[in-house]
Image 1: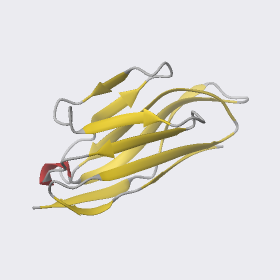
Image 2 (image 1 turned 90 degrees about the horizontal axis):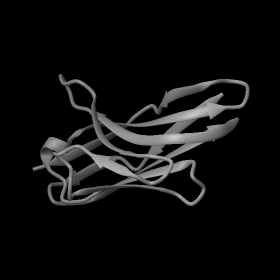
Image 3 (image 1 turned 90 degrees about the vertical axis):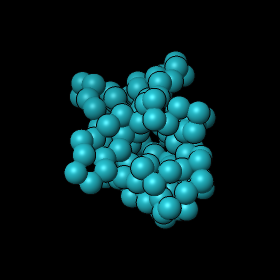
Length: 120
C-alpha cells in the first residue's frame, strides 16, 4: 500500500507565502516524477508544478516566478514553496507521484488534498 500525505495548507492574505509538503510512504521501490495539481471550485484539476527523478522542473505559466517545487533529501518528499500568493491561487492542492511499489508495477498515486485559501 502506497500513500501520499500532504500538509501545509491554510489561510493566507494576498502577497503571503505558504509551503506545502507531501510525503510518500509504503513499500516503495522507486519514485519517478512528483508534482502538485490544484482544483478550484467549478474548475478542472490543473497541473501546478512537476519535478522529475533527475530534478528537472516544469511550472504552469500562472505560477512561474512565484512557486518553487523541490524534493527532499530522502527523495520520498516533495515541497511546493508558494510566494506572492494571489486570490486566484485559492484551491485544493493535490500531491501526485509516479511510484513503483514492491510487487506492483508503476502507478500514479494521489494525496487527499490540502486547502489553500488566499484572501484579498
